[in-house]
Length: 96
Image (cartoon, rainbow, N blue to C red):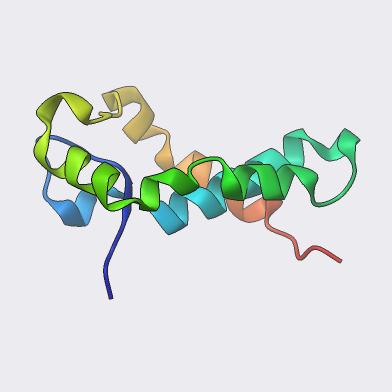
């Protein structure tokens, strides 16, 4: 099975990169929360679909080979990752 990435960390190995399926799922949960006023499901779908183009082979090659194509998280963001995971897990609810 091929692993696709949403974001790379130029100085880190692939195992530390942001996997695309997790990125889309996390974003979908956050978007569902923020777009609740539009009705159930719309924010989730928007978050899930927002980066589908990153599954393209061309994009995956670009972030793997082009040092300027990376997105590096600032150190302060890394410190807040546990908080983000907590918020995301609280927002994950099944859609009816």
